[in-house]
Length: 293
View 1 (cartoon, one colour):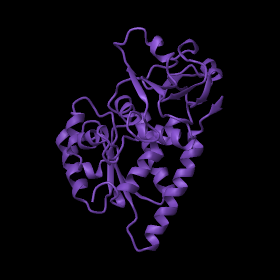
View 2 (tube, one colour; view 1 turned 45 degrees about the vertical axis):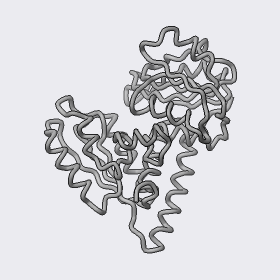
View 3 (spheres, helix red, strand yellow; view 1 turned 180 degrees about the horizontal axis):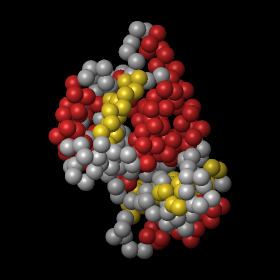
């Protein structure tokens, strides 16, 4: 069993991005600029945005953060997005989700210029991804693909089972893994809340991706010997032994599942760091116009 160290891979990629940024600056180019919009004071969102700002510093990017209270109106956010769309210095930007209930998230996502949509959520990027055209890939699925590639995990002809059908992870990672590419060329099964006997499907998986947000859902009896297990779950669960009073828990019962695997991602330190570095990679692509001219 080998642990897939997402933290280490993410650090390597950030160093590679930083080196490329230095070359851009040396040629007289513009420093890539990532902007973020944060609404409210959700602990998880605050932490995630802080990590993004730190990653920008490590990559040599310029970053800016626009903050709003939870009572911000939808129109105020739309006006902010319009300004960011028109700001030539901003190469890419994100609106941190989730948003307060009185705001239509889909309307916000669709208002973002798809050429600056480094989160990869705009319907144009989602559509292009689904048919294999160049686009900004949703960060977490892109990070998973990077891990499989960096660890040299063979995916061609393998059976991949994805648990979860979210627009952010489940659907796009399934789409990426069935593409004619490497990593890719998988036979993909997507399981979800309406799938009966999920364990019957997961036991057939050469590659199992758990992305449903239920701590410890995947147990040892659901995994075949030698499987590659990618745990996307990051749920905060109470833990009185921690100073914070909580710890991150994945969707996989790591202690009991790990011995059966050929490769497995831990939580934390697996997919999480790759999500952030994928966002950095998308920002570099936006700044250098490698996707959209």
